[in-house]
Length: 490
Ligand code: BGC
Image (cartoon, rainbow, N blue to C red; front, top):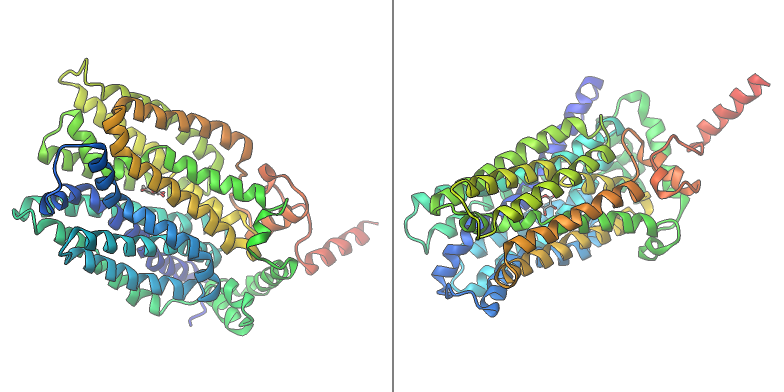
């Protein structure tokens, strides 16, 4: 391991890029269904008439990934603790590959569902473990940026999927084959993740927690400037000494409010309806008036805006902070969702309507991507004390996938039952709730050490103020320094 200070951030960004491949796969494997579903249903001869039963069945083929991810999220805490962050991510790369291949070679619809369940499990584990790993290897100044790498990778995966959909649908005329290529392509980044993670270091925090102090120090030497290593090691040890952690601790008076806040952010993320667009965009655009090719192109535009605005969020998240982004995002999304809903009303449609639908959907995606996309992942990786971090993040991830599944499964049913306009107004309602939620519950954590946030928690600071200036001395050295300074003054 090299040791020059100038190379430290480069090391972290390299690890960040490899681990974020898991995010790319998350995006690719969730997004690919938006273009593939139509051909899968044709291949396996599901009728086009949308009875409630058929809507539910089709919804299930789409929702198999979030369902698998919910299962993965439930066990993700166990994986992160027992296998370690690095090996857990390695394990998911194998699942990603198996899922992509099984779906691609499916002989019956059940194989598609099983393959998608496997991909889902991989996503559920890695969507919790990878941000945790990224957050644990990063110094506070760039932590927001590295963890947001993960979100950026999700959006790139989604965009790649939308492009793959368009290309395969146009190049491969045989509709029983084109969707197989769409899914099969996902095996390539999965292989990249496997190869890349083999040479990545384990999280120093996990190593300390598992008694491998000397290995942990080696890793710290690789990641941090020499001057900071002892302090960093000391801080981690202190936070490990503080409490014994278990699942039950998530329900204590101190931790439970954190859990509710992280859980709530994911519930709001999903109830914004983001995945109604990500997974069903082409059918929304069809209703808006776009043709067969136009609807897939519109979906690519969604992918491009999602990536670009996430890149913008990378530079804003550690400068402006988490709360201002959330406020702006929720307000913007609310207005746009009302516009999308109204533009999809069949009566009163004009030649302009499809473009108004597209423009307001793109603006919605833009507001989501700078705020509610990255912030919940970042906050959940920051607020939980080390001892309950895995359990807390796993529970919060369950909210993400549980509600993702709910929205994904019910969207075709709602579309068929109450129609598009009320459905989008329902999503708008939840973004309005998000404004209040942020104001009342979300702390500002920018530029704070994870251990400082933790010290605030144990010093009794309320939830909203966890990111405030450190309240209690966090290391023995600091305490001694403070006492010495006091003695000098006296
Ligand atoms: C969400 C996903 C969503 C993606 C879109 C993520 O933050 O968790 O459900 O598909 O953003 O970019």
